[in-house]
Image (spheres, one colour):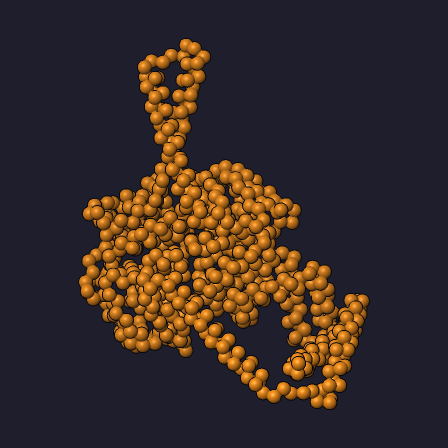
Length: 631
């Protein structure tokens, strides 16, 4: 069984230690999810194992020929390449060969009579045979098609973020490596693609190591969890739900052990204070044990994000959309849309990438104007807009300065007034880090800081565009709890099924062509309704098909004509002869060597014979149906 082992890994950035003495192993068939607060080093650990970053100390070992593929959060593409060129843009021997093959095909299309080009194609085909590369070539195109990418000649720079993520996924999966490393694989993917990915990984025979905020995905894909907490790695067998139960038990046991240690320390301290002297060996040992007990550290205090921020009062009128239409060129994303948003509404916005979801939020936020219609905003409305991309940050600006631009002090839900430093601490930014330049924060830490800045404005209408992207599961849980108690209005675009189920009770479904359906209920309710509808449609199709199939049975049975009878008696022999001929041509092709002209003649003959065989097989099937009908 193939295995990758990491021993005594440590990594720091300047004075900031991420982990020290970290050890773990990943075996074939394991699907491991890494969990931890933003900034604990999850993505860094993935990059170290992928060989993209170097640890300060530690070793990584695996068997000879062990292969690893890495899917980045933000794929780095050459915007000028086509889809297929990008998929074959790697540097392994197999990928280089596939690239050569696609290039040779392109050259033969341009100049089919050029002997040099013909020889180049033949040479590449022989290398493809030698490396068994045909399956990988077909696999690449099959993966792209299953992921919804059918135009292999499309220019990468013209594609959406979701389409680019799918291309990166195909590029990562093409060689079926021993270890797949996936950093936030569900970001920018729609529900159907996430479901496909879940099924693909569940069948994957190698090992998988991933970081994701999608808790349903974690539950359905993983069979082991690594938790990074205060520089230590804890391993749990099972999926995310099992992890939550096991972690609660571990923390309970740690607290019990710490309570026991403190009681023992108090007793020994009282003994020392009574004037204990090291006169005997036994007393010396007891004093030594006391010193050791004194030096021991208890478990680190459990940290959690605190979002107890108040909002502004909201009047009766919130938002109203009247006959709103929006187009981009020939593409209509919204057509005569009408809706009244009421106080307390919790609306989730779903649909395919590029269908207009973010455009709707931009219009509600006043950042985009409709082509026709109106968006009316109530007088008491105070909007906060959390976008997919962080607002333009000055990476040299210090964290505390970034927050103070919004407010020096804020009000909490319990009526307290707290300063900027205190609110940063509540968002898991310790005091010593408040002077850190924004450029030194991790991507997830910047997202958490951006969320804090948005909420510090005390809004009463929250517009959230993919808020779960790049936030850790702990922050997400607290954000969901905050939104449940939030007295204002929430409109959110999200692909995160868990988040939608917990936060919203109404959906806008962008179906394309500017049409928007409204659904009252949770996201899971909607999916169940859609599945029921699809099953009913399939049942109706089967029913109609059955009627069509049964109709001929009522007709008089047809007999074979004289010529058809003679054809029926000889067709199986003809098929056998054609199959033997194809096999014989294949043997000749294997012996032809570098004689490209001869190889081309044989290939054409083989193709012609295969086409003839296919026609005979179809004819055999037709005649067979007539014969069966006479029985």
